[in-house]
Image 1 (cartoon, each protein chain N blue to C red):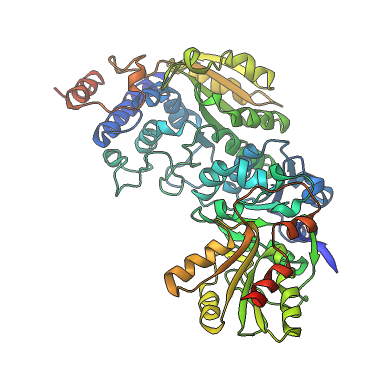
Image 2: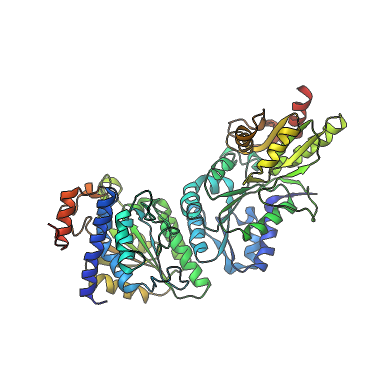
Length: 306
Length: 273
């Protein structure tokens, strides 16, 4: 079954809203696309459409949080992490306020809207702000867990959500923990670190490589910050080849975060698959993933050619 | 407090501003002095606050959106008893909690961290919305600079204040007519400030921002305006109270030297010679 994490987000918000009356939701005229409209319908008095004014939305959320509310703030990743960077940094993260920024339509998988709407720098921007946690859930089950779990953490969190529908990976009983990566398989021929929409590609590559006698492991790095250093070091020591794959610029995102850990703890080569410091373009999301080289085939090539 | 006591208190607040900026040899005296009377009335007469319980849930809140005027805010808080007046001398020092710009997690009595201009009104709106959601009757005050309102976010926020009919919100524009590069008209005119805020749905009150009685009355009037936010436009003098700083753009972000410090303190009546 395929489902976009933004849809799972919208559904999770309703559940959370029923459990916790302090949860409020803010949107910037994109409630239909970010799926916060689901919450708005059930809790109209706890939903605030701030209009096309993302900077103000972030500040309003900051103010609400100082009075005990738990604001979930949504817009496209471009306008959350991009347009409102200063507000997120100075009005939310520096005072360590309890605001959850759930940004949808991240990455080139936005598709047809093109480069102006394809946020491929948000992981870089958000993870370098002190106090901020950064999470990229990969599927429906994980997204729902994350949206609920972060309501229990006091402090800012950036959740990166996708427009593209992707495979449901986990079953309902899967255990998650912020800061702990999830290992799929234990092959030693190589490790693929993935996050968000690239998880399904990594798992697909793992399956196809197995048929060719190459056994790799896939690591779900849904928690970009805090990052699971132990898992990275373990894989660097136990496997022959390390690859990261992300729907993000290769500068500053998942690959960079892993490279930082490797440089500090265990220097080995890492091949980073991602958008190679270029802007996106219009097109169908799946075509774009192929065009920019972030599909299963790109992972397979790395193992077959080298 | 009566007008006479508030007038005396405003002198104490100004002394604190000069002490802080002098000992730091850094900071923003001009705008701190222009907003000093307004903040004095708020902290010693108007606001329902408890210095022994800075995080009291039902307290009135103040967002100093023009956060560089922290010396005025800190001096009010110190004089009100949130922390020792003596600590003002540690302002901007590496081991001090008195950061260059207000930090709500470090300084007791600071309701919102500010400093990056244009962001405070949004936060004040959030506080005012929360009060309405929780049926609480606390009020929220937000101090803006006349240069600061050149920031676009202020006008985004003004629309939000209007949309949610935040009659528990009172915005004060410190209209001292100067910003770093020159006068407001020279750099980027925000005039007419009254017509702008009126058209954004605010009730407008215009006052002399150094007339303690007018300031006091304006807050009384604002409390009784229902169904919309209020904007008090306070005509002020940058550097007010220190003769050589008054209306001098150069005193936006400069500390007095020893001689100037003594002159200022003498004029404020410390007996220093």
